[in-house]
Amino acid sequence: MPAQTTGRDLGPNQLAARLGLTRWQLRLGREHGLLPEPDLEGERWSARLVDECANRSGQVVARFGEDPPVGAIRAAARLAVRTGLDVERRDVEVLVARDGLDVVSSFRGHPLYLLRDLDALDPAAVREVVSARKGPLFDSVDPGGAVTILGWPRKTFDRIAGERNLETDRFGRYALADIHALAADETLAAEVREEKLRRALARARRAETDIEDVVRGWMLRCTAYLDRDADQPPDPAVLGRAIRNLVGTRAESARYEREAL
Image 1 (cartoon, rainbow, N blue to C red):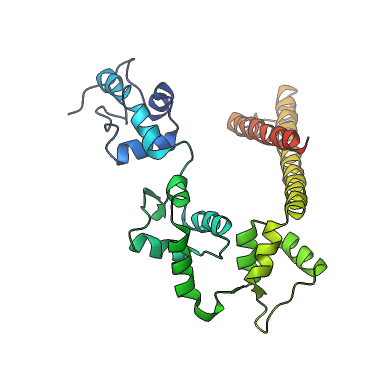
Image 2: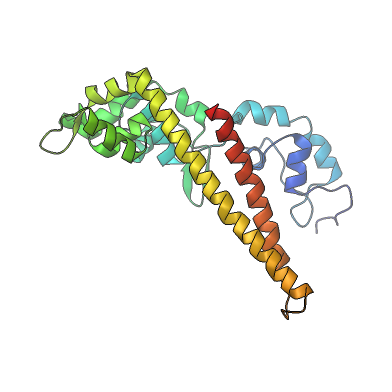
């Protein structure tokens, strides 16, 4: 029977904070045996284990880095931008099957990959896998593949492709060389970055407004209760969630505003 908890015991959030780790780093450290499993009831670590963990946080960071792992779709997108090829999820799975890439963990049954492992992949190995999948279509990409390579929003790509009169073949595919030329255009890349930033800032500000409306509505219901115009007070949990979301959204807006300067 596990020992009872005490005031010196730590839960997952507390342990991660004590070690200077994020929750995902803590989870991977446990999964890979770098950190011990909790030894007390309620998913808690005793003071003895906490002391032992203190010397292992550096190993966790060295092993997994600072960037959280990603799923196959985002892994494919990162490889696409890096290699200039329309990498797909199935290509990532083939790379794993060939022992070229490690699955570091999973989330809801889906494999996860470290960004550092993706960045360390030999581009030639990625090219070989993509070429094997596409065969004679290797030198062309459909609009979705072009967007993946460029890392652009689809609407942006469609507009620029139209403005530049990019030709397509009978299957509606673009020449891979034309997509590479777009990616190499630094002036165009800067314009697209600014456009993406403006759109992201507009989305963040709309989200702020929506959350502010939730908070104002909560305050009105609270006032109604104080004035005895309502029989029940509003749920405090609603306000707590809204405030947390508002803090995060305003921080996001501020970051976009700084980037726009």
